[in-house]
Image 1 (cartoon, rainbow, N blue to C red):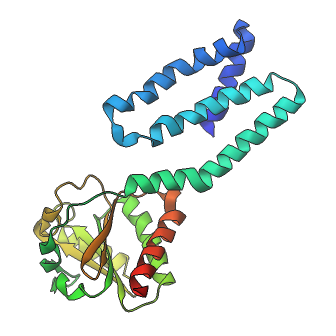
Image 2 (spheres, rainbow, N blue to C red; image 1 turned 90 degrees about the vertical axis):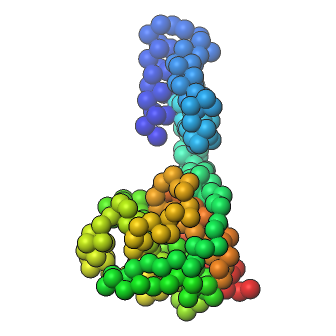
Length: 256
């Protein structure tokens, strides 16, 4: 919204200050940001389509709104209505969809993963292969990771929605980032709810099977030992959509 309003004001300023035509005004104010945004094709393709073309549309929207505001009342009303509708659709559909598509990743799965041992809060060893017969969400985090905390709230909502003993969520702390003492303090201050386990991956015993992790949190979804989906990162803007996708995935597993 800030970008759209800013470029609307910029359009009006350039248009009235320099007495340029509508087309030249739009070209003048949009050329530089368009070139910068489109540079992701060469610098960071992971930002496609979120940075370009999606984010760029808000600049175009601002210029369009500025153009309409230079016209008659009916154009002004139409421009404001179009802008409001675009914001509404973006917030409730485009942004969650784009963020979810960025989070979902393809992961090479090593079957040895579920044979790995981890530690619980007391330092006791837990064998993950005891969970092969369950619908399972495994989410990796480290202490002090803000997106990880946001995602934990979402996963707690998922568990509250699906009260089933055949479904479990594991939160596994990366031991190469967080010390065991910090992990224990975290568990005391943030005790797990029913159906949750918070565990510690000492010496990167688990994460060594996934060398290509690019961001935290990192999630693996299992159907009775079979990896079916994986996600990396998390954004609160996609909270509700992410929640619906997890609920749908787990219900499909449990209903098979």
